[in-house]
Length: 285
Image 1 (cartoon, rainbow, N blue to C red):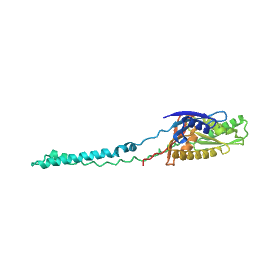
Image 2 (image 1 turned 30 degrees about the horizontal axis):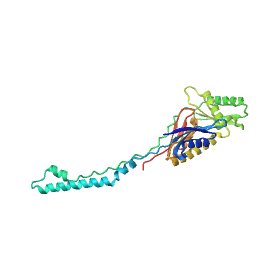
Image 3 (image 1 turned 120 degrees about the horizontal axis):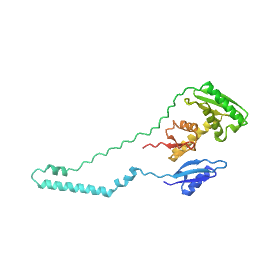
Image 4 (image 1 turned 180 degrees about the vertical axis):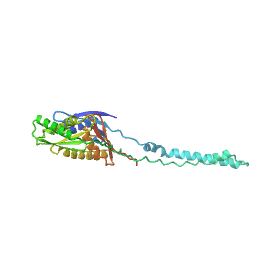
């Protein structure tokens, strides 16, 4: 199995450079995105040539369908029977049981049909544990902390804090996109810092920071990406790796494809480069 890494200004350029180096088409490789690239960073991908699999059935067709061997076997059987019949006619005494048994043509055992394997069953989604709800003190502490952060960033706005179970929602009301950052990286950082500020050793509080409805837009974008990747995975017939994401974004991808019987998903790698892999479901015909 041949694998190479290729780079380019954009993802398309990196993939084209890799295909040119391997001398293959896109249908003949698995594409794994290592770096999506940016303003000052090149895109990087890993291309792996897909090896064609030969089924066991195809490997034995030629042996079963050789006419010469079949005819020879049948001729030998006829000659053996004729010889046994001549011997039995010449002898006046009863033939021995061994000779009768040898003269009888062997009955071919019926070929048992192979039992088809059970269809692939998708793994059941993990059951989420129930945790105690967030306290009013934790909600107030998270709100005050984020207000201090945006003030230090010279961003004018206010923080609206609510809670639902063990989840604290922090909505930063402002027109300044600085709190969101590239692909929500700044918003994720604010969220992580606020979570560490309010959680205790024995608590499992989740903090969700949002601004200008970014989370809903990002979720819709990830769901669209998940469905588009599933269609491509089924069409190509091999697995597809998505770019590294945080746990909340990976969860959206997994949830979006839970009911899709054509594919199944799995997270691989280590943080912060852990990513979702989409696999096609293979069924025996």
